[in-house]
Length: 127
Image (tube, rainbow, N blue to C red):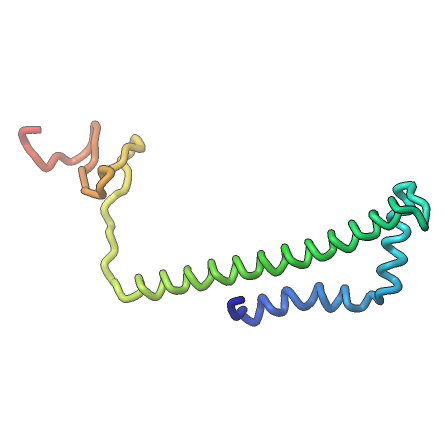
């Protein structure tokens, strides 16, 4: 697992800390109430399955949160790396990307084609 930025650690720990404030007995009571609200009676196999499902959902939620944080950390690192690599270049392409009609001024290989249509400057006086 990659190391996390401090803010992501805090984002992950705050919900876990709040969840940690709930004792396992309180969590079990909440799960029992939830399963009972579904109509399952305590002591039956379906009730036990419901309790296991509640535990699995909580574990899945925690794993999803950690996966999201890790994905965000990778994205932030990639963006920082991209920014650092482009920060050294001070050349800014100020050519218009599209003409006034929305047609691209560059072909698919990135070659500048110039603007198209009425009102555009023409580089070639014969064209």
